[in-house]
Image 1 (cartoon, rainbow, N blue to C red):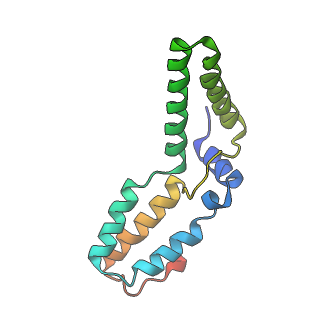
Image 2 (image 1 turned 180 degrees about the horizontal axis):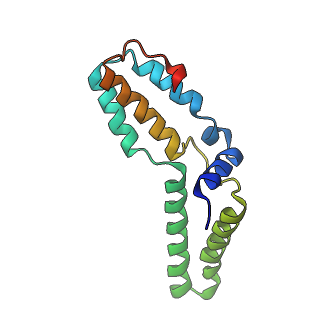
Length: 137
């Protein structure tokens, strides 16, 4: 059985800095939102609930490419079946080695998104959103 926690840690360690180094961003965001109103904090929590994490993004891109390759393989020729074969190979290698994901842009892991959500909910729950020490998150 694959150890999901170790796999996620490996992915973050080998990820581009924009993916793996967002903990500072979480603290910065909490510092920013502690000065905002409850309404603004609530809006940010809703945005975080809709934010896509890195794994979800990769899964969508890979499935769309694989589906396109299958459709082209059936309709335009078997040579197009190399696309889904390559994608399956990539996921096999990623599962075994936990290597870097080929992404551009700023993506965060599900854990990093959840940490920010938790911090913001604590601000609202405690009513201390004006006095938060972000170093404890």
